[in-house]
Length: 194
Length: 194
DNA sequence: AAATGATGTTAAACTAGATTAACTTTTATT
DNA sequence: AATAAAAGTTAATCTAGTTTAACATCATTT
Image 1 (cartoon, helix red, strand yellow):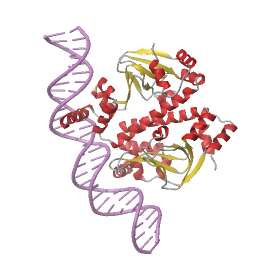
Image 2 (spheres, chains in turn yellow, green, purple, blue):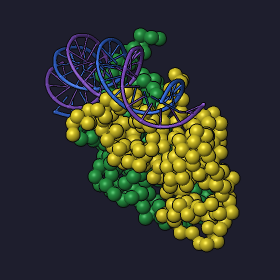
Image 3 (tube, helix red, strand yellow):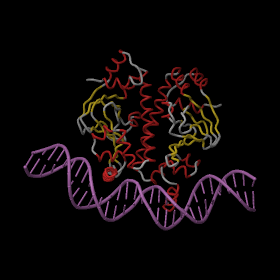
Image 4 (tube, protein in one colour):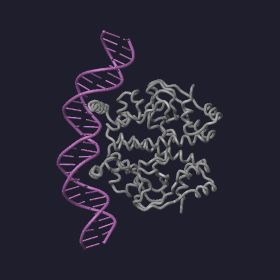
């Protein structure tokens, strides 16, 4: 198992000694999932924070009308979990499902706590990670309020060009909070315009 | 200056010794603002993370059409800042303005860094604080996608009854992402219903 | 008490995006 | 190659929420 991408990700924010890396390696689990498999199911407690080594996941929930709403996608080098469920160990609001065969590094609550004990610097790493996630989430709220559907789609396309190619359009529509029919209309408008 | 509410807030997540409390006290600044004064202005670098001892603030941005969008309110016992600007020390997306005379504990970047050095446990405290802020932000995105304006208003009223009473309706409309006219319509519908 | 400005309401006309439904294209399975 | 299933398109109709504009109420200042 090659966890170099994880180490790269962590050492963007903090430095690790060789012993710390060994300690980290001794704690983590790498797991493979097949396309379609669930990492977390709405209603269950989310047991892991995950780092994506390869593959792609979607995080979504099913509303009271049975409609699916995609909250985020995660590809290589991203973290994913239902953080609300994970930190409080209460039932998850979200499902996390693999859209491709994927390989993930899994951090259980116990492992995370052990790591914070053994490598206190990791507390800083995760603080910075969540700070950035929070800022991204705030910016998304802002976009939802001030951009039209077309503008949001253009933003998405520019921001996540790699994701767009790997994922069916109807899922992108769901992520943007619009119907697949309307996204289709936006795309045909964009073609006419250029 | 009575910073008991701040200490209470921190000791919800971590314990502090008497020396640590003294160290903390030696570092922080408490500042008073008048109604209408700005704590942060869009375009400036956000210099402080703030804890509200008393009063009330709104965090908002002005979009390209000159329209104001309120992102959050903060009252006693809440934290506020433009975190994106603060952690990267780049120009702020948001304004933070006092809606009432307010008293705030101000943490500059340097002070925060000193505190992390002197009281490493604070790293944990702020991690947990931001984790919760992130989860709340995610849940807000979910509500934006799956609730009607009326449902969102009812949720707001239930969740933040104290805030609703202190703030003009048109600001609540802005926070909910709807026009003041439509909120007015919703309210008159609610009166007819009961 | 009058006047000004800020806040809130009502109603008519409008629009971005949803819904429905029929159809086409692409991909996967036998 | 044939079939089925999944993904994407088009168009007509509908609706939640916006826009505009006129008016009403409340609070503050003189």
